[in-house]
Image 1 (cartoon, one colour):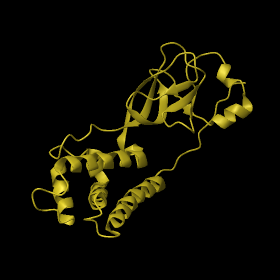
Image 2 (cartoon, helix red, strand yellow; image 1 turned 45 degrees about the vertical axis):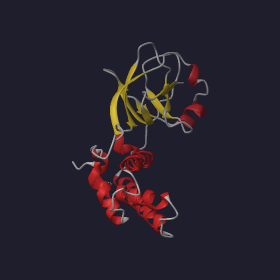
Image 3 (spheres, one colour; image 1 turned 90 degrees about the vertical axis):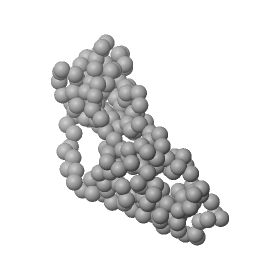
Length: 216
């Protein structure tokens, strides 16, 4: 697994920043690299997904992803219990407008919170000590310096996109050194590579319609 220093050397070669002291310091390069990982995580959270326990807040349908999550993605089951099926909140609202107040019990359904990527709803509301098994995305540990290893999620597909992003940040840093339009060219390259990955993933997925279990 290559260290960040390899990518930094390549980016400096592309931008002709080869003489010491470098125009862009190692510390600033590390900052750019971590910024890339954060942007990639927002665009492709599935690359940074993890599966684990979600401890419910008792007495409410509204739940939140574990600390450190950047987006909630899925709920699979009550731990050591039944499967929890994804449902549509709009359908619950139409067919059982009082679902929020139904008695607490083992989760049967979960629903996305359209306005908050870290929160989700379950039905019925959680009893005490309920734990769900779910999936969420979280950022890897930040790279401390140029000797750090590039996260494996980046190396799978997005090493070229990271190179484009680093060059974009270098070129955009200082107008005195930037060639007109060059920074945008590299940002467009980064966006195109990440966008192509999103499109490929979307085409590969064939989601099934979620079944809905609505209490009377």
